[in-house]
Image 1 (cartoon, helix red, strand yellow):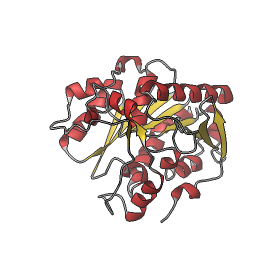
Image 2 (cartoon, one colour):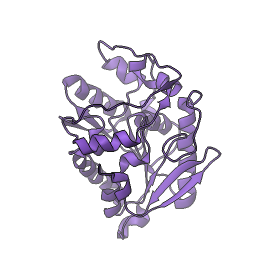
Image 3 (tube, rainbow, N blue to C red):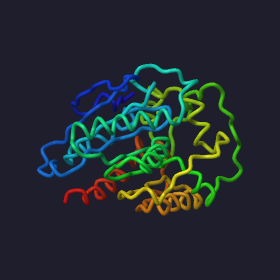
Image 4 (cartoon, helix red, strand yellow):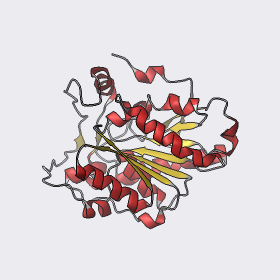
Length: 278
């Protein structure tokens, strides 16, 4: 199995806060525009950690972007935590802490790039925390978007004390190879049922309300699209926060980060980031 996490560029690591959040910092390579650019903060989704960005990071480093990768409490190399007690709000507090750390180091707030659960966390955070920009990659949707384009025929799965890691028993997907899936299977871990129960409509949640008009930074929404409802939800999310939209047909949720077409999303993000070179 190819372990993409071990192929990432050299970087620095540190633990911050009382929960010993594991933060990885990648320094952009020699771009003269670094001094005017805000840094990037990558926020992972459920069950994962900073390792999920392993294919993305080299592209942003090569393009000269300083990048921070958070690990929420209990994830990857952050200190172990009791997943039976962790709340959605606890994860919000983790991201706030890291943004404060970045502002102290860099003198400017970051552009936040959130995937899946990290996307709904980032949306909620952007209501009240000043950030330079927001990129959502196949984000979990907010209550308002679900009201507009609801999931149909949900087979609700009520969480227990924790949500076990996805098994990923399949060998391939439409945009992931055997190696792509095996890489994820190596690192996937359990998740907080209470956090899931707050935002996941598949777990019977009422959803997280996001006041889109309070999100005033530039934003970009990228979605995996396999049917019209996927596209409608993605467009509704972009409208709700006043952002640009890209739907990538024939891709999967995790494939957008680690699959064979991940570079299409990366290219769009890098093009969108050009606005910050001013």
